[in-house]
Image (cartoon, rainbow, N blue to C red):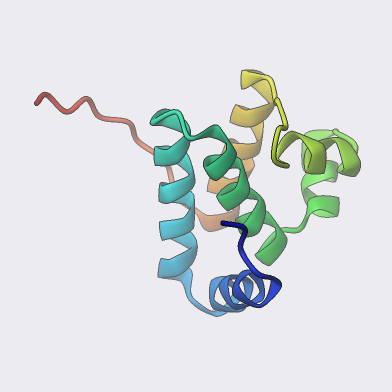
Amino acid sequence: MALTRDFKDTVRARARRDPKFRLALIEEAIESLIDGDLDGGRSILSDYIKATIGYPALARLTGKDTKSLIRMLSPGGNPTSRNLLQILRHVQEQEGVKVEVRVKYE
């Protein structure tokens, strides 16, 4: 089911005012990517970028074209691991956090 414009606007508004929500978006995006939900992870990451740093600023930081970044994170986008990790590095810097990966044995 596609998300409505109102829902995406609500997510963006909350991300702009709530630092904990922004961190939860980053966490959910990374978990989705690791779990193989690439479309979901890219979509959440895109929502975070639109609500915070914005694609034009991210383009300046990464040296990538704005439209290329948008395509990378769009449904069906296919960013290289180098590009995706570069985006995640700048997202971490934006929030002043460091993502840590831990192995969990089940």
